[in-house]
Length: 271
Length: 293
Image (tube, rainbow over all chains, first blue to last red; front, top):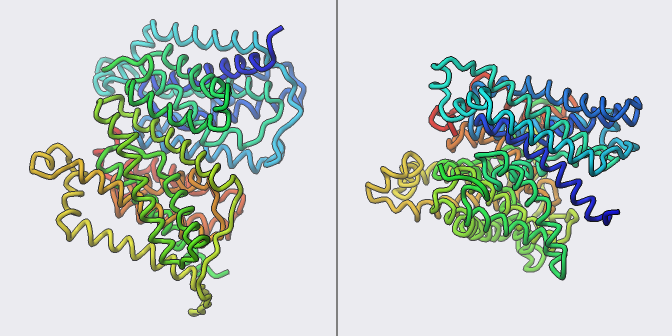
């Protein structure tokens, strides 16, 4: 048996890998989002409600959580055709806030007092099977025709459109796919935490996911994975010794130092 | 309550958002950077003001001055320690943003350790009057908030349009390379920009503390989000847009609470923004330059 503390760190690492990949997908097409926490909340609440209240089996609830987030993602993805860069970052941040306030007032899922009694279905094997599936998805997309289309859109939209890439389809579907993966990540989180409330899916959560991807290096999904591992494990390592009470301060300072030393991200490539 | 009273309250709330949004937009103008620790600089300013009131028994003016000074120094330090080194190495354009998130975490943690994680009251040593102007009721605290924030905005307007340094600031925001070639020391201008942006945020911190009579180390995030929204509404990098954007968001917030539902107050501002973005993606006054990010 694994030490429960180590097990929980490994589970959170797995969940964060899924979440980081959920942002990597739209980022690979040049779509930056600071609202992944919102999609995560939709997935978490949908699947949590389905298992805790409607008593559906976990597998179906997990998928429905992702699906719901993905559908919302498709709708939110439409404006990405017109809105870019910093505007998109702030717009998605606004979306995340709207989702949070929505769940803060939505009575069927407990509003501000949160949704409890969610069964603990998220175990270590489950998390890592899902994380590996997400990694495999990114790997498959990277090497495919679609992946090259996505890369073309990121590098030069106009040129991509001229050579016959359907911008609308690529951008909206990759944004929706990212939202789907974030919803899955949220479902995993809900079935490990067993209690969720809107505060857990605030701006801070979205910023954390954003941090993982940029810190790891935006060029590839291995970078996003590395970023997720660093952002999860680093604060835990800082628990060791007397540093305990200063750990978040040190973590913040280390973020600054890492970005100074590796301004392209840990595994990023200078472009 | 009457609509006109709501609008006055909205302008009061919104003018503090404007001060924060101006900071974001000034920084964005010169560096094309979203300064994600700006909300925490605002929070530190509020606490600096509070310390002056509590420890030195200072009045409103002393609190505002102290907040402006402390925040200005802090803002410049943030630039020198966490932004400039990354800019110098020409990293990914989002790298400085992540580093400012790190700074935000540090500042919030330090404030929590120094002042505790609870909300604390913000006592104001000021005679309290109440004026009734027709349908509008105005307290002296509200009047001070309005006068200070609108006054600072007007002063900023005079500064950037009439003084040489202000013009150099605008030139740097227009194009750093060309203004540098013309002999403007861009590095000094950037430092000055951070000082002004942060001082305004610090003053806003005291004003918000006065108006809600409470501050906490976690207040930076909420105001930061509102300030970003206001900047976006006005158009990135546009000072007058940020002023107007803040006022619009303040008014929308107050009116939505009064006539619709208080539980959605933090979301309404964003509904407005998303609506504006869909119709006019560059914001009210924005140019297309920055849309590419």
